[in-house]
Length: 351
Ligand code: NAD
Image (cartoon, rainbow, N blue to C red; front, side, top):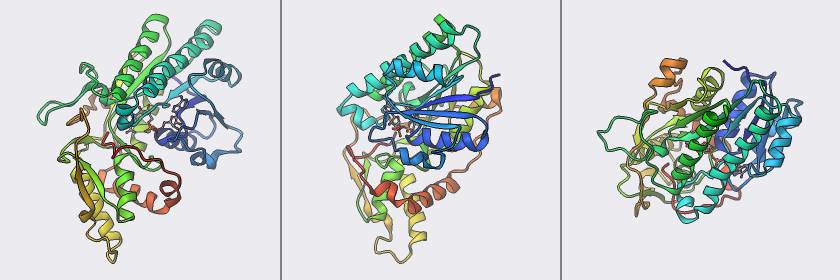
Protein backbone atom coordinates (compact mmCIF):
# COMPACT_ATOMS: atom_id res chain seq x y z
CA UNK A 1 0.00 0.00 0.00
CA UNK A 2 0.97 3.62 -0.52
CA UNK A 3 -0.08 6.69 1.43
CA UNK A 4 0.09 9.73 -0.89
CA UNK A 5 0.84 12.98 0.92
CA UNK A 6 2.29 15.31 -1.70
CA UNK A 7 0.95 14.93 -5.24
CA UNK A 8 1.95 16.33 -8.60
CA UNK A 9 -1.12 16.24 -10.84
CA UNK A 10 -0.31 16.82 -14.51
CA UNK A 11 -3.12 18.15 -16.69
CA UNK A 12 -5.00 19.11 -13.53
CA UNK A 13 -6.78 22.01 -15.26
CA UNK A 14 -8.38 19.73 -17.88
CA UNK A 15 -11.61 17.78 -17.59
CA UNK A 16 -10.71 14.69 -15.55
CA UNK A 17 -7.77 16.36 -13.78
CA UNK A 18 -9.98 19.18 -12.47
CA UNK A 19 -12.51 16.69 -11.14
CA UNK A 20 -9.66 14.68 -9.60
CA UNK A 21 -8.28 17.70 -7.74
CA UNK A 22 -11.73 18.58 -6.38
CA UNK A 23 -12.36 14.96 -5.38
CA UNK A 24 -8.96 14.49 -3.79
CA UNK A 25 -8.88 17.68 -1.71
CA UNK A 26 -12.36 16.95 -0.43
CA UNK A 27 -11.42 13.39 0.57
CA UNK A 28 -7.96 14.21 1.86
CA UNK A 29 -7.83 17.88 2.88
CA UNK A 30 -4.57 17.39 4.76
CA UNK A 31 -2.60 16.39 1.68
CA UNK A 32 -0.77 18.72 -0.69
CA UNK A 33 -1.39 19.09 -4.43
CA UNK A 34 0.75 20.76 -7.08
CA UNK A 35 -0.98 21.02 -10.47
CA UNK A 36 1.28 21.20 -13.52
CA UNK A 37 -0.63 22.27 -16.63
CA UNK A 38 0.49 24.16 -19.72
CA UNK A 39 -3.10 25.37 -20.33
CA UNK A 40 -3.76 24.33 -23.90
CA UNK A 41 -7.20 25.14 -25.34
CA UNK A 42 -8.51 22.30 -23.11
CA UNK A 43 -7.15 23.57 -19.78
CA UNK A 44 -8.78 26.28 -17.66
CA UNK A 45 -7.15 27.61 -14.53
CA UNK A 46 -10.53 29.01 -13.41
CA UNK A 47 -11.70 25.40 -12.91
CA UNK A 48 -9.47 25.28 -9.83
CA UNK A 49 -10.35 28.70 -8.43
CA UNK A 50 -11.85 27.14 -5.29
CA UNK A 51 -8.36 26.03 -4.22
CA UNK A 52 -6.29 29.09 -5.16
CA UNK A 53 -4.75 30.64 -2.06
CA UNK A 54 -4.91 27.45 0.03
CA UNK A 55 -1.57 26.59 1.61
CA UNK A 56 -1.82 22.99 0.39
CA UNK A 57 -2.46 23.90 -3.26
CA UNK A 58 -0.15 25.27 -5.92
CA UNK A 59 -0.78 25.83 -9.61
CA UNK A 60 2.22 25.84 -11.95
CA UNK A 61 1.73 26.73 -15.59
CA UNK A 62 4.28 24.62 -17.40
CA UNK A 63 4.90 21.87 -19.91
CA UNK A 64 5.38 18.21 -19.02
CA UNK A 65 8.01 18.21 -21.78
CA UNK A 66 10.11 20.56 -19.61
CA UNK A 67 12.02 17.88 -17.74
CA UNK A 68 14.08 20.41 -15.79
CA UNK A 69 10.91 22.02 -14.44
CA UNK A 70 9.38 18.66 -13.49
CA UNK A 71 12.61 17.61 -11.77
CA UNK A 72 12.71 20.88 -9.84
CA UNK A 73 9.08 20.49 -8.73
CA UNK A 74 9.62 16.91 -7.56
CA UNK A 75 12.59 18.07 -5.49
CA UNK A 76 11.35 21.35 -4.04
CA UNK A 77 7.83 20.10 -3.28
CA UNK A 78 9.03 16.68 -2.00
CA UNK A 79 6.44 15.05 -4.24
CA UNK A 80 5.75 11.37 -3.43
CA UNK A 81 2.98 10.68 -5.98
CA UNK A 82 2.53 11.70 -9.58
CA UNK A 83 -0.89 11.36 -11.20
CA UNK A 84 -0.47 11.86 -14.91
CA UNK A 85 -3.51 13.17 -16.80
CA UNK A 86 -1.85 15.67 -19.16
CA UNK A 87 -2.42 14.74 -22.79
CA UNK A 88 -3.79 15.77 -26.11
CA UNK A 89 -7.10 13.95 -25.83
CA UNK A 90 -9.36 14.64 -28.80
CA UNK A 91 -9.45 11.89 -31.47
CA UNK A 92 -10.65 14.20 -34.25
CA UNK A 93 -7.76 16.59 -33.66
CA UNK A 94 -5.34 13.65 -33.76
CA UNK A 95 -6.58 12.67 -37.20
CA UNK A 96 -5.81 16.08 -38.69
CA UNK A 97 -2.75 16.96 -36.60
CA UNK A 98 -1.05 13.93 -35.05
CA UNK A 99 2.28 15.66 -34.25
CA UNK A 100 1.11 17.33 -31.03
CA UNK A 101 -0.25 13.97 -29.86
CA UNK A 102 3.01 12.13 -30.33
CA UNK A 103 4.94 14.93 -28.69
CA UNK A 104 2.79 15.46 -25.60
CA UNK A 105 1.52 11.94 -25.06
CA UNK A 106 4.71 10.02 -25.81
CA UNK A 107 7.64 12.42 -25.25
CA UNK A 108 5.75 14.22 -22.48
CA UNK A 109 5.17 10.99 -20.57
CA UNK A 110 8.79 10.01 -21.08
CA UNK A 111 9.95 13.38 -19.74
CA UNK A 112 7.96 12.79 -16.53
CA UNK A 113 9.37 9.27 -16.18
CA UNK A 114 12.94 10.54 -16.60
CA UNK A 115 12.41 13.22 -13.95
CA UNK A 116 10.82 10.65 -11.61
CA UNK A 117 13.69 8.23 -12.11
CA UNK A 118 16.27 10.94 -11.38
CA UNK A 119 14.65 12.21 -8.20
CA UNK A 120 12.96 9.12 -6.78
CA UNK A 121 15.40 6.38 -7.76
CA UNK A 122 18.83 7.94 -8.37
CA UNK A 123 18.82 10.70 -5.73
CA UNK A 124 16.66 9.11 -3.01
CA UNK A 125 16.86 5.32 -3.27
CA UNK A 126 14.23 3.72 -1.01
CA UNK A 127 11.92 6.78 -1.14
CA UNK A 128 8.26 5.64 -1.19
CA UNK A 129 6.70 6.92 -4.38
CA UNK A 130 4.04 6.21 -7.03
CA UNK A 131 3.72 7.17 -10.66
CA UNK A 132 0.14 6.65 -11.82
CA UNK A 133 -0.46 6.86 -15.55
CA UNK A 134 -3.98 7.60 -16.79
CA UNK A 135 -4.75 5.94 -20.11
CA UNK A 136 -7.64 4.87 -22.27
CA UNK A 137 -9.48 1.76 -23.45
CA UNK A 138 -8.89 2.95 -27.01
CA UNK A 139 -5.47 1.28 -26.92
CA UNK A 140 -7.31 -2.06 -27.34
CA UNK A 141 -8.92 -1.08 -30.66
CA UNK A 142 -12.50 -1.89 -31.50
CA UNK A 143 -15.06 -4.61 -30.69
CA UNK A 144 -17.89 -6.16 -32.66
CA UNK A 145 -21.31 -6.20 -30.94
CA UNK A 146 -20.80 -9.76 -29.71
CA UNK A 147 -17.13 -9.65 -28.68
CA UNK A 148 -16.34 -9.98 -24.98
CA UNK A 149 -15.34 -6.72 -23.26
CA UNK A 150 -11.69 -5.56 -23.03
CA UNK A 151 -9.64 -7.07 -20.22
CA UNK A 152 -6.13 -6.10 -19.15
CA UNK A 153 -4.76 -8.90 -21.33
CA UNK A 154 -6.55 -7.86 -24.53
CA UNK A 155 -3.81 -7.27 -27.14
CA UNK A 156 -3.11 -3.64 -27.98
CA UNK A 157 -4.50 -2.60 -31.39
CA UNK A 158 -4.82 1.20 -31.43
CA UNK A 159 -6.60 2.62 -34.48
CA UNK A 160 -6.25 6.40 -34.26
CA UNK A 161 -3.11 8.50 -33.82
CA UNK A 162 -4.51 9.47 -30.39
CA UNK A 163 -4.92 5.83 -29.35
CA UNK A 164 -1.50 4.91 -30.77
CA UNK A 165 0.19 7.70 -28.82
CA UNK A 166 -1.51 6.58 -25.60
CA UNK A 167 -0.54 2.95 -26.32
CA UNK A 168 3.08 4.01 -26.75
CA UNK A 169 3.00 5.92 -23.47
CA UNK A 170 1.60 2.87 -21.65
CA UNK A 171 4.51 0.80 -22.93
CA UNK A 172 7.12 3.36 -21.84
CA UNK A 173 5.60 3.46 -18.35
CA UNK A 174 5.72 -0.33 -18.25
CA UNK A 175 9.35 -0.33 -19.34
CA UNK A 176 10.39 2.16 -16.63
CA UNK A 177 8.87 -0.13 -14.03
CA UNK A 178 10.35 -3.29 -15.47
CA UNK A 179 13.81 -1.92 -16.24
CA UNK A 180 14.48 0.63 -13.50
CA UNK A 181 12.04 -0.38 -10.77
CA UNK A 182 10.02 2.82 -10.83
CA UNK A 183 6.83 2.22 -8.80
CA UNK A 184 4.22 2.64 -11.52
CA UNK A 185 0.58 1.76 -12.05
CA UNK A 186 -1.60 2.36 -15.12
CA UNK A 187 -5.35 2.61 -15.60
CA UNK A 188 -7.19 2.25 -18.92
CA UNK A 189 -10.66 3.66 -18.70
CA UNK A 190 -13.68 4.12 -20.89
CA UNK A 191 -15.40 7.35 -21.95
CA UNK A 192 -15.80 9.77 -19.09
CA UNK A 193 -18.56 12.31 -18.64
CA UNK A 194 -19.36 14.94 -16.06
CA UNK A 195 -18.63 18.60 -15.23
CA UNK A 196 -15.77 20.58 -16.82
CA UNK A 197 -15.57 18.56 -20.04
CA UNK A 198 -14.56 20.70 -22.99
CA UNK A 199 -17.55 21.10 -25.32
CA UNK A 200 -15.90 19.42 -28.29
CA UNK A 201 -16.69 16.00 -26.76
CA UNK A 202 -20.04 14.37 -27.43
CA UNK A 203 -22.07 15.05 -24.27
CA UNK A 204 -21.14 18.72 -23.63
CA UNK A 205 -21.20 19.41 -27.37
CA UNK A 206 -24.73 18.04 -27.63
CA UNK A 207 -25.90 19.91 -24.52
CA UNK A 208 -24.50 23.25 -25.69
CA UNK A 209 -25.89 22.84 -29.23
CA UNK A 210 -29.33 21.69 -28.06
CA UNK A 211 -29.61 24.60 -25.64
CA UNK A 212 -28.90 26.99 -28.48
CA UNK A 213 -31.29 25.27 -30.90
CA UNK A 214 -28.39 24.22 -33.13
CA UNK A 215 -27.89 20.96 -35.03
CA UNK A 216 -26.26 18.09 -33.14
CA UNK A 217 -24.04 16.17 -35.57
CA UNK A 218 -24.06 12.37 -35.21
CA UNK A 219 -21.34 10.41 -36.96
CA UNK A 220 -22.44 7.66 -39.40
CA UNK A 221 -25.44 5.67 -38.20
CA UNK A 222 -25.00 6.72 -34.56
CA UNK A 223 -24.79 3.11 -33.45
CA UNK A 224 -21.21 3.31 -32.17
CA UNK A 225 -21.21 1.98 -28.63
CA UNK A 226 -19.24 3.48 -25.74
CA UNK A 227 -19.12 2.46 -22.09
CA UNK A 228 -19.85 5.68 -20.17
CA UNK A 229 -18.07 6.24 -16.87
CA UNK A 230 -18.99 9.11 -14.56
CA UNK A 231 -15.82 11.07 -13.86
CA UNK A 232 -16.07 10.71 -10.05
CA UNK A 233 -16.30 6.94 -10.40
CA UNK A 234 -13.15 7.06 -12.52
CA UNK A 235 -11.34 9.12 -9.90
CA UNK A 236 -12.44 6.78 -7.11
CA UNK A 237 -10.86 3.98 -9.13
CA UNK A 238 -7.60 5.91 -9.53
CA UNK A 239 -7.57 6.60 -5.79
CA UNK A 240 -7.84 2.86 -5.04
CA UNK A 241 -5.10 1.98 -7.53
CA UNK A 242 -2.67 4.57 -6.17
CA UNK A 243 -3.19 3.32 -2.61
CA UNK A 244 -3.63 -0.41 -3.07
CA UNK A 245 -2.78 -1.31 -6.66
CA UNK A 246 0.03 -3.73 -7.35
CA UNK A 247 3.16 -2.15 -8.80
CA UNK A 248 3.61 -2.59 -12.53
CA UNK A 249 -0.04 -3.57 -12.99
CA UNK A 250 -2.66 -2.19 -15.32
CA UNK A 251 -6.29 -1.85 -14.21
CA UNK A 252 -9.26 -1.28 -16.49
CA UNK A 253 -11.93 1.09 -15.18
CA UNK A 254 -15.39 1.13 -16.79
CA UNK A 255 -18.90 2.17 -15.91
CA UNK A 256 -20.74 -1.07 -16.81
CA UNK A 257 -22.83 1.17 -18.98
CA UNK A 258 -22.75 0.59 -22.73
CA UNK A 259 -24.76 3.07 -24.79
CA UNK A 260 -25.06 3.67 -28.51
CA UNK A 261 -24.31 7.32 -29.29
CA UNK A 262 -27.75 7.92 -30.73
CA UNK A 263 -29.48 6.51 -27.63
CA UNK A 264 -27.36 8.75 -25.46
CA UNK A 265 -28.41 11.81 -27.46
CA UNK A 266 -32.06 10.76 -27.31
CA UNK A 267 -31.80 10.46 -23.53
CA UNK A 268 -30.35 13.98 -23.37
CA UNK A 269 -33.12 15.31 -25.61
CA UNK A 270 -35.74 13.77 -23.34
CA UNK A 271 -34.18 15.35 -20.26
CA UNK A 272 -34.12 18.73 -22.00
CA UNK A 273 -37.72 18.36 -23.19
CA UNK A 274 -38.76 17.73 -19.58
CA UNK A 275 -36.72 20.68 -18.26
CA UNK A 276 -37.97 23.16 -20.87
CA UNK A 277 -41.47 22.04 -21.95
CA UNK A 278 -42.28 25.51 -23.35
CA UNK A 279 -39.09 25.86 -25.40
CA UNK A 280 -39.44 26.40 -29.17
CA UNK A 281 -36.76 23.68 -29.51
CA UNK A 282 -39.07 20.93 -28.16
CA UNK A 283 -38.81 18.16 -29.27
CA UNK A 284 -35.04 18.56 -29.05
CA UNK A 285 -34.70 15.43 -31.25
CA UNK A 286 -35.48 17.58 -34.26
CA UNK A 287 -31.93 18.98 -34.08
CA UNK A 288 -30.18 15.63 -34.59
CA UNK A 289 -28.28 15.59 -37.91
CA UNK A 290 -26.39 12.60 -39.30
CA UNK A 291 -22.97 13.41 -40.82
CA UNK A 292 -20.29 11.36 -42.62
CA UNK A 293 -18.55 8.99 -40.23
CA UNK A 294 -15.11 9.70 -38.79
CA UNK A 295 -12.31 7.89 -40.68
CA UNK A 296 -11.34 4.68 -38.90
CA UNK A 297 -14.11 5.16 -36.33
CA UNK A 298 -14.05 2.39 -33.72
CA UNK A 299 -17.41 0.63 -33.51
CA UNK A 300 -17.63 -0.43 -29.91
CA UNK A 301 -15.66 -0.19 -26.68
CA UNK A 302 -16.56 -2.13 -23.56
CA UNK A 303 -14.61 -2.64 -20.36
CA UNK A 304 -14.42 -5.71 -18.18
CA UNK A 305 -14.05 -4.30 -14.65
CA UNK A 306 -13.45 -7.57 -12.82
CA UNK A 307 -9.79 -7.07 -11.98
CA UNK A 308 -10.17 -3.77 -10.12
CA UNK A 309 -13.43 -4.96 -8.53
CA UNK A 310 -12.03 -8.29 -7.32
CA UNK A 311 -8.56 -7.09 -6.32
CA UNK A 312 -9.26 -3.62 -4.97
CA UNK A 313 -12.97 -3.73 -4.07
CA UNK A 314 -13.94 -1.18 -6.70
CA UNK A 315 -17.62 -0.56 -7.51
CA UNK A 316 -18.98 2.24 -9.72
CA UNK A 317 -21.29 4.18 -7.38
CA UNK A 318 -23.24 6.19 -9.89
CA UNK A 319 -26.11 5.36 -12.25
CA UNK A 320 -26.22 6.63 -15.81
CA UNK A 321 -29.65 8.27 -15.56
CA UNK A 322 -28.89 10.25 -12.42
CA UNK A 323 -25.46 11.27 -13.66
CA UNK A 324 -26.62 12.38 -17.07
CA UNK A 325 -29.17 14.57 -15.35
CA UNK A 326 -26.55 15.85 -12.87
CA UNK A 327 -24.18 16.62 -15.76
CA UNK A 328 -26.89 18.46 -17.68
CA UNK A 329 -27.64 20.58 -14.60
CA UNK A 330 -23.98 21.46 -14.25
CA UNK A 331 -23.84 22.77 -17.84
CA UNK A 332 -27.14 24.62 -17.36
CA UNK A 333 -25.69 26.39 -14.31
CA UNK A 334 -22.25 26.88 -15.84
CA UNK A 335 -23.13 28.50 -19.10
CA UNK A 336 -19.99 30.64 -19.02
CA UNK A 337 -17.92 27.46 -19.20
CA UNK A 338 -19.25 26.38 -22.59
CA UNK A 339 -20.22 29.72 -24.12
CA UNK A 340 -16.96 31.60 -23.71
CA UNK A 341 -14.08 31.20 -26.13
CA UNK A 342 -14.73 27.61 -27.19
CA UNK A 343 -12.54 26.53 -30.09
CA UNK A 344 -14.45 23.80 -31.85
CA UNK A 345 -12.67 21.41 -34.11
CA UNK A 346 -14.12 18.83 -36.49
CA UNK A 347 -17.60 17.61 -35.79
CA UNK A 348 -17.54 15.90 -32.46
CA UNK A 349 -15.75 13.11 -30.69
CA UNK A 350 -17.59 10.03 -29.62
CA UNK A 351 -14.50 8.84 -27.84
P1 NAD B 1 -8.42 17.23 -21.45
O1 NAD B 1 -8.06 17.43 -22.88
O2 NAD B 1 -9.72 17.79 -20.94
O3 NAD B 1 -7.29 17.84 -20.52
C1 NAD B 1 -5.92 17.68 -20.77
C2 NAD B 1 -5.15 18.67 -19.91
O4 NAD B 1 -3.76 18.46 -20.13
C3 NAD B 1 -5.46 20.13 -20.25
O5 NAD B 1 -5.66 20.87 -19.07
C4 NAD B 1 -4.19 20.59 -20.96
O6 NAD B 1 -3.93 21.97 -20.79
C5 NAD B 1 -3.13 19.71 -20.31
N1 NAD B 1 -1.95 19.54 -21.17
C6 NAD B 1 -1.92 19.18 -22.48
N2 NAD B 1 -0.66 19.14 -22.93
C7 NAD B 1 0.15 19.45 -21.86
C8 NAD B 1 1.55 19.56 -21.68
N3 NAD B 1 2.39 19.35 -22.69
N4 NAD B 1 2.02 19.90 -20.47
C9 NAD B 1 1.18 20.13 -19.42
N5 NAD B 1 -0.16 20.05 -19.54
C10 NAD B 1 -0.67 19.70 -20.74
O7 NAD B 1 -8.33 15.67 -21.20
P2 NAD B 1 -9.18 14.72 -20.23
O8 NAD B 1 -10.38 14.31 -20.93
O9 NAD B 1 -9.26 15.34 -18.88
O10 NAD B 1 -8.20 13.46 -20.16
C11 NAD B 1 -7.22 13.31 -19.14
C12 NAD B 1 -6.47 12.02 -19.35
O11 NAD B 1 -7.37 10.92 -19.33
C13 NAD B 1 -5.75 11.93 -20.70
O12 NAD B 1 -4.51 11.32 -20.50
C14 NAD B 1 -6.66 11.07 -21.55
O13 NAD B 1 -5.91 10.37 -22.52
C15 NAD B 1 -7.23 10.14 -20.50
N6 NAD B 1 -8.56 9.59 -20.83
C16 NAD B 1 -9.63 10.42 -21.02
C17 NAD B 1 -10.88 9.89 -21.30
C18 NAD B 1 -12.10 10.75 -21.46
O14 NAD B 1 -13.18 10.23 -21.70
N7 NAD B 1 -12.00 12.07 -21.35
C19 NAD B 1 -11.04 8.50 -21.39
C20 NAD B 1 -9.92 7.69 -21.20
C21 NAD B 1 -8.69 8.25 -20.89
